[in-house]
Length: 154
Length: 175
Image (cartoon, rainbow over all chains, first blue to last red; front, side, top):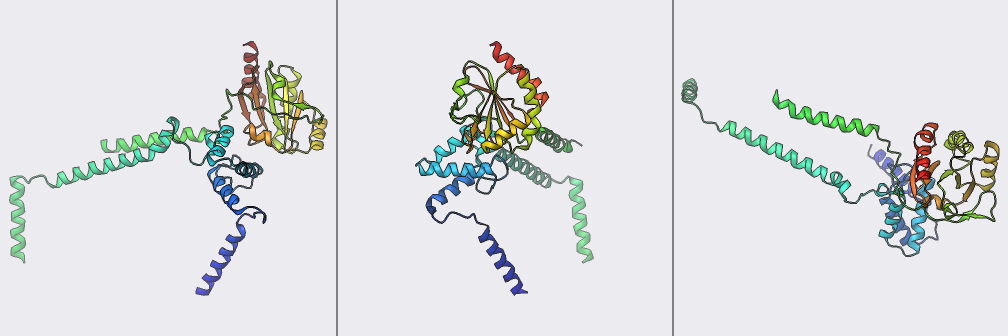
C-alpha cells in the first residue's frame, strides 16, 4: 500500500516537472524568472481567469514576448505594468490598484468582518445580561426549595 | 419575527447584487482608449505593401477601424453587416488585418467582398496590442480629431450598427 502511494506521488511529481513551461535553452534564466513573475501578475484577456503565465492563448504569448522585450530594453516592472494598463485598463492587473472606484473591493471584506464582529459582540453581551438578571423573590424561594429537596433525596 | 428581518434584508440585497452581476458581460472589458487619441502606427497596406497607412491620414473624417482576420470565425458573421454599412457610404471603414497571412487576407476579401476603404496589415499583431485588441473582431469609432469615441467588442450586429454606430457617426459628423 505504501509503495503504491510512493509510486503515485512520484508519477505526479514527474508530471509536474514536465508541465513546467519549456524555455529556450539559450535564454537568460534571470530574465526568464522576471518575465514569469510579471506574467503571473497580469491577466490574460482571452481566458480571463488565468494569468499570462498560465495561459497558452496566442495573445498571452504575444504579451509575454512583449514583457520579455521590454525587460531587455531595461524597462522597470512599473513601466511594464503601466504599458499594459494603458492598453487594457486596470482589468489586466490581478491586483487592482486602490482607487475611489475600487475602495469597496479592497475595504468591503474588512467592513463585513467588522460588522460580523459587532453583531457577535452585541449578541454575547445581551446573552450575558440575560443570565445575570436577578431572581425575583418567588424564584429565589423556589430555588431554595428545590435545593432542599435535592439534599433530602441524597 | 423582528429578528428575521435583518437576515432577510441582507439576503434580498445579496440577491440584488447577484441579479445585476449575472447580467453584466465579463467579456466586455471597458476600453481605456475612449476619449484618447487613436494610437499612431504606420504599416504597409494589405493590398499594396509598398504603400503605408497611418491613422493621421484620416484626420478630419469620422471613420471606423475594424480589426479582422481571415482566420476569425466571428468576422464571417459580421461581414454582411459591414458590407451593408459600406454600401450606405455613411462612414469610411478602415480594416486592420490582424495576425494574418497576406495572401489569405487578400483571398478572403476577394471571396466575401471588401467593405474597407483600405486595410492595414498587422502581421505580428503589434498594432493590435497598441489598440488593446484581445478578441477579433473589434471596431473603433474615431472622430475628426483622431480621438477614439467608442469601441465595439465582438462581431458588429445590425442592431449595434443601427442603434449605436450610425447615430454616433452622425452626431460626430454634425459636431
